Image 1 (cartoon, rainbow, N blue to C red):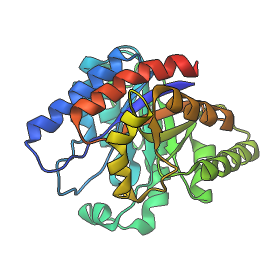
Image 2: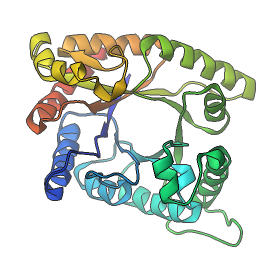
Image 3: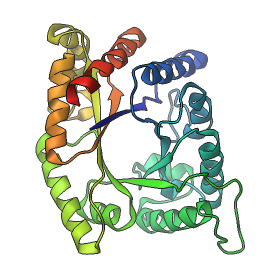
Length: 293
């Protein structure tokens, strides 16, 4: 099993340079811990500091090496030519494979900011993905080409939860990405639905990734000290069985269970607010990786 990270991009109101520095420090810690991949998310019209994925990832790649890296893009909110150009440039900066995670997105406030509605997001997603893929492969689309194109073939992971969206992931994606809100029971169902859809479309279901929000403590008591108050406040409205919290041994055991379900990649986001605690948790993921393997 591979263990990567998706860095938190949104923070409470603070000096904007502090949040940016925290992300750079976390990327550096993830590289030092030997994590297998580095990602950053996508969100818009946010009233608190939220660091946008394209410029931030460009900076974070300076802390990374040839391991896979990429970003999540809410495709209905992007013009496909602009997105393809951004992906081509980011992939050229990256030393290794570039992975485009993508999803349809949600929230009226995001779509309203772009004069869009949720009603058209599925069709916009499919059109955008098809165009971006073709442009990034060096094709001409409606008289348009981009340069640079990604030096390696673009890999696409599609996030989904609803059955129709999971079917879309099976039909159009190179991998399925399960969201952080899914409980273990829901994950088993999602994996089964995805595999059935892949079989229906004659596609390979070998790559299944899952996002988990985590904290790795020195031991279980230390993990509860940091994460307990966060979870008690109803962290992101998640079911309490969705986040993964514990000692390195406990977290490794939880990740092993995900592997038994069929997940090939766990993409970690840290749920603690304190920067020092997050950096310690990232460091302990090196031990988790050894235990899982």
